[in-house]
Image (cartoon, rainbow, N blue to C red; front, top):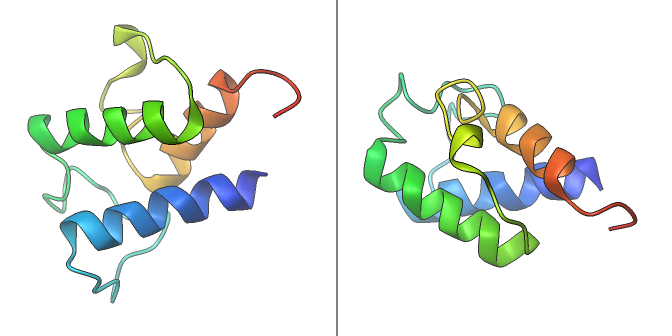
Length: 85
């Protein structure tokens, strides 16, 4: 499941904000430092996570550490998923 979550988030970021060009982008790339995520794109990513994984993020979950890279976002999603999914 972990690999599927990471892949889904990775592909969404590449197709939405990188125009399909994933050269130099991996699951540890700093999303804020590279300018991929700003306040608006972070909210769009939160909406994508809510819709795709059917989970509800708390405002405290949305911070620079949890949205640092694909791996940290995937960790958050896995923590929030209901058990058994």
